[in-house]
Length: 272
Image 1 (spheres, rainbow, N blue to C red):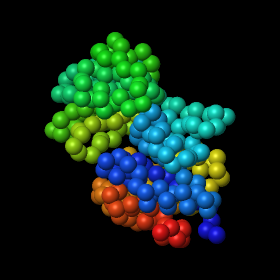
Image 2: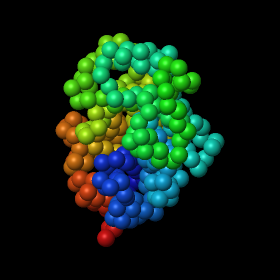
Image 3: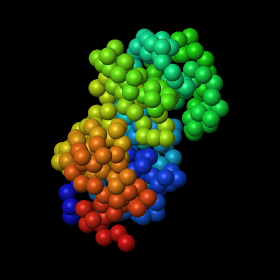
């Protein structure tokens, strides 16, 4: 029997195929891993409302890391505690104010399951509508009433570096920011010091599993901390080069069941 491992899965570009499904092979391997005593959890930048269906599909009973660590809770165990670390509302409004000097399409603030749009935008509202959040549209300086879990700035590629550089100059002590992969030019902002590794560590402490027995899979900017923290940080074949450089190993792409292929082999699961 292999020692018990904690397996942490990013969703988009990692566990999920490009059409946002969990393949049958990945599902079978994860099921087998759980039957053999390994612990499987999700660590995503998504809110809970748009990751809950995958949590249910896999039949999980573990904590989940959402918003890159800004919201961590255990859907099946309310005694576990809810760890919500939002940005300060004053900082959020300062950022909106400063963005007046830059070109951007929209700013979106999320407070767990409530979504605030600076400008009305049908296409974006469609994307964010998963899980039926409560949606408010209008100038965030007026309409945002609570500290946001996370903020997104949707901009053009040529503005991305300028805005990120401003955020680093002015707010480095209070926020962390990352950018999404093309085609979306989006800057994601959370409270300083938060990342997926912070949430993963809470779960690892709870299950009493050392980092040497954590296997984490990811493909993007927001997975770097988690892959570095895990004893086995595994980059997807489709991952960005920064992730591949930091990873212990690179597996196949998300379209080739990279997660399932790696785990089946590494944990000797003998899943067909």
